[in-house]
Length: 142
Image 1 (cartoon, helix red, strand yellow):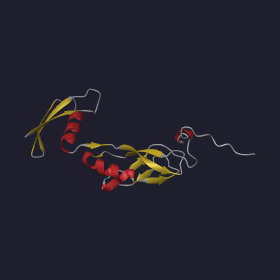
Image 2 (cartoon, one colour):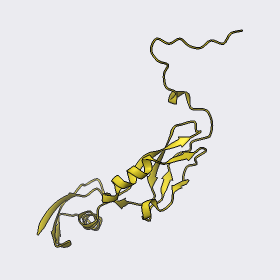
Image 3 (tube, one colour):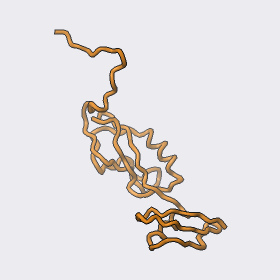
């Protein structure tokens, strides 16, 4: 039998919940102060999930990246594979808030959704790399 100590994140209280697991099944759970804590601990002990938040490359946009998140929590063990997949993605501008960029990410029920707009156009000045040290600005001849 294994005992796991889980800190609940369902509310600000942060209950410390002890979960006893035997052969993949929960046999005892204690320390939660509400039903949400029990639900969280049961999920976390057997199959932990997280909402994945990251960014995706944008081609032709005013920003080089768009922030994204999964539409539902995904299995924690799948996140490294998902990140490998996402780092190879490039979407074309414009990107709209709420736009699904990858449906059913790696066979899960979670979609990858944009969390901001990225208009099409020239890069925003804040996203333009600085000129190399010692270089002079280009001045057009008359």
